[in-house]
Amino acid sequence: MSQIPVIEAELHAYIDGLLPAERRAEVEAYLAAHPEDAQRTRAWREQNQALHAWFDPVLAEALPARVRRSTRLRRMPPALRYAAVAVWFALGGVAGWYLHAYNTVQSAAGIAFAREAVIAHAVYSPEVRHPVEVGADQEAHLVAWLSKRLGATLKVPQLQRVGYQLVGGRLLPGNQGPVAQFMFQDGNGRRLTLYVRRGARDSSETAFRFAQERGVGVFYWLDGKFGYALSGEIDKAALLRVAEAVYQQLNP
Amino acid sequence: MDAPGRDFVPHIPRLRRYARALTGERTRADDLVQDTLERALIKLHLWQPGSDMRAWLFTLMHNVFINQLRAQSARSTVELDDEAAQVAVRPTQTDGLEVRDLQAALLRLPEEQREVLLLVGLDRMTYEETAGVLGIPVGTVMSRLSRARERLRGLLAGGAVPAALKVVK
Image (cartoon, rainbow over the protein chains, first blue to last red):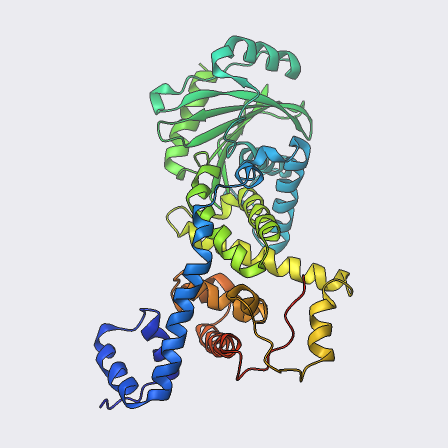
């Protein structure tokens, strides 16, 4: 018989298969000597078996359409979706997950812009069926349309060299008017979004700035005419590499 | 993040199984799963790649479930109290009214015990994982598990634990 007394928790661990192997024999010896506990643990084991017998058939049931649909954000109308994420971010701010700015000197407007971009990224990059309004197969139309809506000629960077293909783009409401969002995807389905707005009249050129909110990194910069924010859940160095490629192409 | 809704799909059958056992009703269970998945999509950027997505989804489901319970108990004193009223009015009538099936017996456990029992017994989570999902200490998991199993044993044996009337749907 064991030196260390067997405790109740070990009886549970025994039937749940969570007991360390070296303790097994001692618990079994204990149960052999304590028929009442042996009976209890047998009943518990039968409960586990009954739970499986009773509920495992659910595993094989076809998923109801509504449950399947709920794996896609587009169940919600776009405005609501946007609001849901924005509200979540706002609550996150209250809870202490604020957009962490790495540069000491950052304009409030710049941070607000980066935040908008991150929210838009969080809303649309998970989209399975409708990640964009206009796909890359209609790139010329996409660029013409978004240029017209933003009131300035846009260019879409070609990012194949850094491993990303254009998925397409969409028009979004920004705090200062219409915003274009272009989405890119790499071979593993990882997505980046480039958020572009017209430059504010008082804005000048800025360096790259980086901010991050729980896994979504964003590089943003102004080049006078436009403000850009590139968001993605990749590490900072990899994101910077893409941001530089974007910058070089748009500012030859 | 790559088409993340797809990442949920392999976990849905287990979420449904747990929800069914937890709520005892197909429709309510699927509501719970649906609400959980919608919340998961909105919160997906909080999920740490490489961490256990199943545990994360179960945690969300626990939170949704608790919120629903709170909302219900705040809102209704009629439908919900049916069950409680019967138990309260006739607490001593334990004259052999048997709990007819496992589902009915489960529903007689307090939610907090039912959750622990199911996560451990049905989903085969470790006690630490269960503690993580429910946001409680492991010691609390053990005491709830112990109470749940003993209570269920009594209910299924139709004896030791006072059996209230069968819950009428």
